[in-house]
Length: 374
Image 1 (cartoon, rainbow, N blue to C red):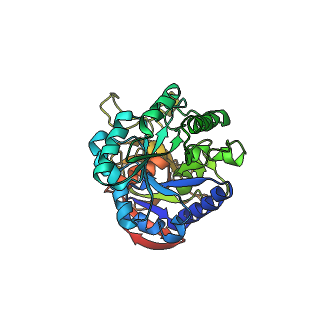
Image 2: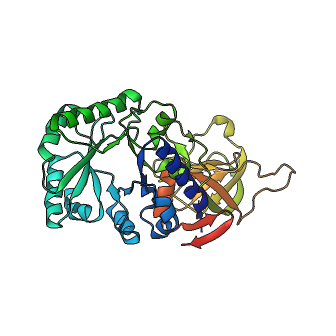
Image 3: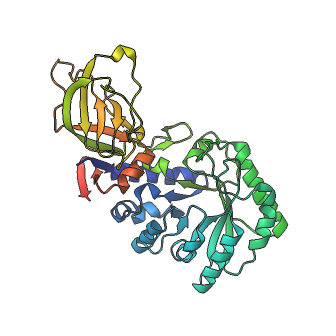
């Protein structure tokens, strides 16, 4: 069975380094755990007292995950990181201390549910800054705030924005300055105080390093940098965080020398991906290995072989084909055999997919030591 290995030690070190770095820059942050799909074993390994003591909150986009977080540690501040669906309003109030919102009707429903549960539910109003995902239009923000800031069981604790997640609009000083100015406008007009100005996610972190963050931006929602050590702004390592935190090992279940170009009429019946073929490849052969995972587990586009000679050439529902060239090592001996493992580096989305697959074995690793298998 293919196996995803998770290096808990390095992930914990990444979180502690981010804690120190953000604290030095007077920024609070939420650790976003959605990549792990609410897995309780992961939460127990990661969210220990020494880790969570300097984190403002822990966030997720799934209510089942927030429920698990609360069961693990009822003292954790939890944040629901997408606008709530009205059908699940009661559970949002039950399991999330804070939610990100952009709909008046939804906030009215949250107020009603919070009143029923005898709670004060906190909200961050999301502001549209060009990404065209969630967010109140900027010209409507003041009137939107006027409608909700006096609701009996709602506390508006801040403003937020989302950049870089759909169209890839980059967070810039000017973009985030707009958020800062709206904060000042609302505080001045309504005589209130907004505690959290949430300037984005891992993609915004390089702005701190480059001293291009407006002073009022004081909260980040970070997942990718904590777990993968990179910022999606440039897909490069951030600070000295560890980037080797996940390894996907998959076994060779067939190994044969075969043609490069398929033999027959190619139509659209294939459910997988296929490479483009060149005329020069006609009649040529290469060694092909079949690996024990497929589209039901993860898309090959998010996987990078550690061995740079290996090329991913095709995938079906439960098997993947790779080209391993002449299958010779530097000494001229056969390099791979049936039963050997091939290591692939998974992307953020690939890890999320793999974690959701019941056909993939998962292991926690501390250094070179196996902690648990599940």
